[in-house]
Image (cartoon, rainbow, N blue to C red; front, side, top):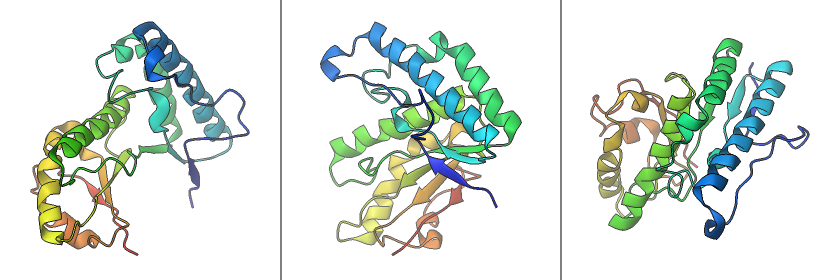
Length: 206
């Protein structure tokens, strides 16, 4: 049996994720914070390897303002050596990592602006996993969203919201629902095979 944990290890010194206020978030500061956070991630990965921890969720806070202010920054180029090193350690150890955009990433929102904004968040998480050089066995878990009084319409709205997954990084994707929206069989049914040919459904129902 493999064991794991999500994001933080309070007993690992120097492994916290740093951020700043939006008002102070200039390019130089953000790139510096990203470097510090990658150092923290490296400490966590090495701690996991030493202690036989095989499952780990990478914090969404790794890249401060990853789907907004940092979206256009060249952090993947500035820190390419560190990203390659961390990704290599993950692959060699056999550890399986994941990322999980939060509950406020609602791709099937009835508000078009909310749905459009939400689409940028999974894009950021996919970019992190891709920049670490990790394959589709390293998953991203997405919330399916709410029912909004009409389960079928809710599912129909979710499919266009995942249109950006028609590419290799979309292979490592899982769905999750805790709202009673559907079972894994039902939530997978409307998705065309081309969207995510090797996805795994991990939906939960109350």
